[in-house]
Image (cartoon, rainbow, N blue to C red; front, side, top):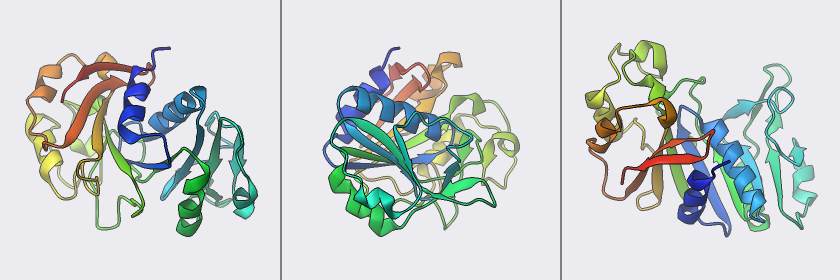
Length: 235
């Protein structure tokens, strides 16, 4: 498999005590899993976690070596390349949710990279935020915003979680999403942030992405997470 997307992300986020928070919609979980797998393959110790909710590892394959759902994670000392998952189980909902923030902070020293799913979008490609989200910890070192390109041309009522308006996801809407305080870049770190437009393998109009109004300090990629391929480095 081509892994150029994850190689590029590793060069951006760093692999020495990095805490990377994923926000937005359209493939955060896939990105987390694939990125962790790549990092493990190059000899890194990686943890996946969440500051919101994720699917249960009993129902979804995260490809990890170990799963932790309690404080036993604090006594585990990784000594070789690995990928682990740490979150708390909610038996009633079937979801796994945010462990104590102080535990996550303490674990940074044990792993080369911790990848945190910091947002929820109900598996929709676009996310519009509220005052409560995303949940990006203050010790985050890099943020990656994700949007699924299969939303383009569809109505927000179908593809945008948190959006009250019924609009078409087009160039104007994407520019709004880039600029609005509750949009794609909310809680992203100035100078330490990237956007991954996921699903580029099935998207033909990359010109539209080139013409969007991006902040100067953000790196932007049209990519296929499942293939690990960058179709275009937009900026």
